[in-house]
Amino acid sequence: MKTKALDYIIYDEASQKYVMDPEQAVRDDVEKHHWKNSFKTILKDWRLYLMLVPMILVFLFWRYLPMYELLGCFKWTEVGKDVADQYFVGLANFQKLMFSGDNLSRDFWRAFRNTFLLSFYGLCFGFPMPIILALFFNEIKSNIMRSIYQVLTYLPKFMSTVIMTTLVIMLVKESDIVSGMGVISRFLSSIGIISDDAAKAGLLNDPKYFRAIYQISGIWETAGYDSIVFFAAIIAVSPTSYEAAQIDGAGKMAQMKYVVLPSILSTIVIMLITRIGHLLSIGYEKVILLYNVNIYETADVVSTFAARYGVEGSSQGLASAAEMLNNVVGMILVIGANTIARKASDVSLY
Image 1: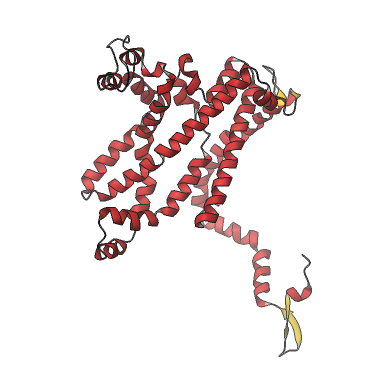
Image 2 (image 1 turned 90 degrees about the horizontal axis):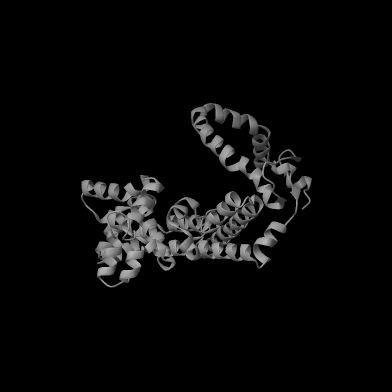
């Protein structure tokens, strides 16, 4: 698009001369002194910018510098050699992972499927739970009791992954570990949900129970902590909205449906987009502490696949390619979810 002189000047009938548009003059002055004004702003609020330094360093050393190693997914990696000195093979690692048809490819697609299913089930069952908890917290009138309940639900989040997985293992353990069958296994066996043989063998030794155990333990661990954002959005709702709903005869459930949920819809959409962005980002820590060879069929995910082949199998290139592919799919998902949310509800992450 070409610019013309008339786009920046106007004709002044009083002086019968062409002069610069006042708005354009202001824009030119702001642009001319942009860096000077920015420096003044930083100098004025230097304490706030100083607090950003630790976070910038964290992102630099733990987020950006490790990206250099992603070059390994395009190279034939050799132990002991720097990534820059390795032989470039292009997309060969990706082709071997996805289309070779051997055990490696089958293991990768199994891990990718398990990653998607675990994340999808977590989105379906785990995402609504913090919202439900926040709604319940909002209905508790006593501040003391609300604080007690909130602390009890937040507490599992502040326990280490090792402690959480150890508790899960003890609850569903097999019968030959010291004190006998786990409490959960014994209870499920007594009411007939699982067989006695499955309970004695241990639920974590049967692949069909792993996904349920993973999701339930995940909800137990994170639901309370994740409800903080939604509870903060709920308490920001104006009391006059509740009063208007009560005058119209709305009960508690109707107030939740027609007052609270519409008021926090933007928060729900933003958190949902963020959750979809991490749909395929399952950390290996919890899975690797829970799974074993007997349940690879449903428990092996991309992160544990990459750790197994990258560390134990010395195939860093293939492991990097698996993680890269996983992250690219996750990026596409978050872009797609953000686009759909922006067109459907005018609320989006960016």
